[in-house]
Every structure is written in structure tokens, then in C-alpha cells.
Image (cartoon, rainbow, N blue to C red; front, side, top):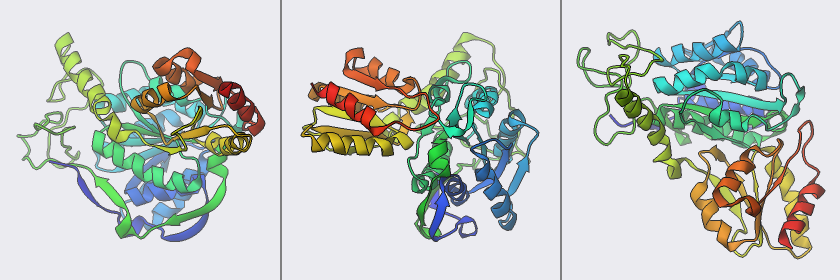
Length: 391
């Protein structure tokens, strides 16, 4: 059964123009997407997402918010919510994200659609709890053990926090996988105008439930041509074996290499084989550029000032802003690389995603502009890197 695409439930949609910070906007996007279960634990700078949800959900039918005893409990609770038929989400920041990693892997192997919001701050450990960072990006790709794939989106404004929250839930449902909304403290706490359309204008992907009778259904049996298997809701009379062990189409543990290979190649393939449909980015003046700046999140906004200053000095500078970081836009980077001198890649970390760009197009082709976090880049530092790369 294909995933049903409908419009948002009017009961969960705040409409019109509002002055919201990114955290509150992400909450509104989740509600518009149909999120009706959130489990979380307070942690700076993400708490405002769930604070707003706890107030808003009280007036929406069938909605539940629960504050758990910690982040570990929160991340397993949303998997329970998913199998009970809810679109589910948890919200955290760096230290809590680390605690959730085992359940990220469990969500991947269970093919459980769910959303993890990480409003990034400076680490490691407690670090600078109230200040900005982007150093959880590689953890969003490889944080749990074993091989799996997840999807990571990086908004650069409160408007995108709203829109990307909807996209995160839609992708989770389409590909039956955990999706990360990788915000950062600046975007999360930034107040800007957010325009929210009518519910009838918001495209929502709904879960594909089985049309088979109990006794005929297997939880991981896919129909030919389908990306993922249909769902069945716990409590509706279907037998549904849930395990973190390697399992076959029935959901039953099978302890051999053949089953592991079949299961794992499907889990990875459903993302890798559809990467071009998931990847999303904006481009500005790429054609004819000598240097292209890569960016995501709040760094995209700081980068604009540096790019404009470099252009004012006569340099040909393009900008590629990543909306989706994982999967990485491999094909596009490899298309651009032969036409330019270098990429310049500023990040509020010590070069985590830059490493992926260097792997694709060569170590000497990518200039990493790292920053330890706590503040954003000085645009003049990025401008200097652009001018050096253009020589």
C-alpha cells in the first residue's frame, strides 16, 4: 500500500504570520505534520520546543506529551508511541543526544518512523550549555553502533524550523527510519516572522497501514515496488514481533549471515538508492564561480556577509547551502568540483562535514574553516578564506 499523502489536520495547525523563535516554530511544524506524541526531558537549548508542545497538545484530540525521567527513557518511549500508531518525536541537545544513540540504532533496525530534534550547543560533555555549536553532525550520521542510515535536516531560520519539521515527519513515514532535525542554538532561539499556511496547503505523508487481515500480515514483508513494508498498529489484532535482533520478514530473530545481509542491505538501500530524492540544497551564483562556499544552519547566514564582501572585491563566489546534510549531496559536489578552484566550508565544529566533502572531491579541493563554537564565525575570517582560495 503506498503512503497516503493528504493535507494537515486543521486541529493541529496554527495559521497566519507569527513572531516565533526556531524552537517554537519547530513545535508548530511537528503539530502540522501530525505529531501527536512527544516524550522528552528538559535540556538547554531545546526545552522551549517541548514546553510549547505540552501547552498546545492539551487542546488537540488524541495528543500526548510526557516528561520522562531522562533522555534514555524519552527515546524508547517514542518508539512505543510509533508502534501504537502515533507520529512521535523527542527533543534534546548534545548530552541527551548521546544518551539516545542506542535507541537510534533500535529505531533503524525496527524501521520505526520517528523524529529526533537536536538543538545543538557547544561540547563535548556539558560544554557551553547556552551557546551555539554544530558539532553533533557526525554523530547524527554514525552515532549509534552498527551500520544504518538516517536522514538529517539543518534549518537556518525559524521559518525553516517550521517547514523542515514537517519534512522530517514526511521523510520518516516515507522511508520508515529515524530522521534528525539538526537545529542549533542560534536558530533555535532566533525570533523572526514565520508564515504558516492553511492546513489545506500543507502536504502531509501518512503512514501506510496494511490492508491485510490478521494472520495474513508480516511486519517486514514488502510488496514488489514498495520502498518499505506496510505498518500495523499495536492493539488492532495483528501479531507483531518487535526485536532489536537481526530479523526476517516476519520480525522473528534469525541468527545467520544471510538474514543479516538481506535486512541490512534493505535498511541502507532504501536511503542510498533514493538519496537524490532526499538531498536538498540552495545554490547561488554557482555557474562561473571560482570559489563555492558550502554551509548549513546558522553558519549559512553568517557566510552571506562574507560572500557579498568578497564579491564586492571582484571575486566570483558561489554559495551552496545544505538543507539536508545526510545524505550528503555527493553527485552535485562532484559535478561542481571540476569547474571551480576550491570549496570553502565554514562550520561551528572542527571540520566534521568538511571531511565528507574532502573525501568526495579531494583533500586539496576543500578549505575547512573550523570554529570551536560558543559564538558564530567572524565573517571576515570566512572572507579571508575565500580570498585565499581564489588565488
